[in-house]
Amino acid sequence: MKNKKIIKSVASSLLFPLISIIVAMFVAVIFVMWAKHISFFKGVQVMFKAIWNGSFGRKDSFIETLVYVIPLLFTGLANAVAFKTGLFNIGVEGEFMISITVGAIVGIIPGIPPVIHVILVLIAGTLAGVLWAGIVGYLKAKVGSNEVVNSIMMNYIALYFSNYLIMGPFNKKGLAQTADIQPSAMLWRFLGDDYRVNIGLYIGLLMVVLIYIFFWKTTWGYEIRAVGINQYAAEYGGINIKKNIILAMAISGGIAGLGGAVYVSGIQHHAIQMVSFTGYGFDGIAVALLAKNNPIGIIFSALLFGALNTSSISLQMANIPKQIVFLIQAIILIFVAADYVYKWIAEKRKKGALLNE
Image (cartoon, rainbow, N blue to C red):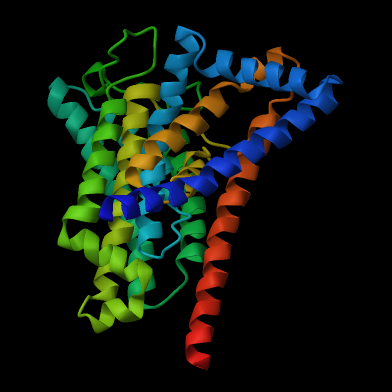
């Protein structure tokens, strides 16, 4: 009986994300039909072939998909931790960016032994993310200010402060970037220097396992989930709401910061001047929502979004606008968000019915 309930719960939680993906693909095919003046079944064949070839069909494309997956694992987890506490950490983008800059600055320091240097870069990036998100969490807990507004402002501060450091004291003359980090600060690219995939992928998967254990096997994780489900009930049960808000935001920022450090240490090897946001923090919102904030589910949603991002070039080569990728992502996000709204309305109606009785 218990196993049946578990299976039913898992099936119901997976149903809406699967429906959203199917509907998104269906709508995308209609646009491909319109753009290329072909039949529906031909549109399905052309679009899916382009997506497959651009993301999994060749060795190079599959490896590049994994490169996209690495930062999405971290930003997806960072958003999931905040969502689990009932918080909306829009600032994952800023936390990711500032940690790239801090990681690059630590990475260019010469004379540090290899293993220690990499660890210092990762720690520095993580602490930068903790600080950036911790400010927002502290203001939310102590003053009651809106974390969405504050985290958006922190994103812009991260953007312009990073650009000041990159183009100012740490600029590589003649280029809009810092100097490359020292070889001792680089994460190991286990398929060789010709490919950007690195052990940051394993660090991301390890974080997935650790956050899963944290949520469901620790007291702190239980308290964070309790606060997210019902703050008033959690407070009545003796849980410190303010402490858990700050803790959740700090953990969320730390994960995003670690992701930024992994990005600069394993993928980019320097920080570049940014004219706009990287987008990884915002994509992480979609990754977390599609996974229903489940750490294990984030692996699969990050793989999906990574594959879509990688396949944009292949779509263009097939004369399909690369904006199809953004269309698919947007429709998935709309459907997933609609599921949350539906559940919220249903819960409100249920509470109203109980009060009327």
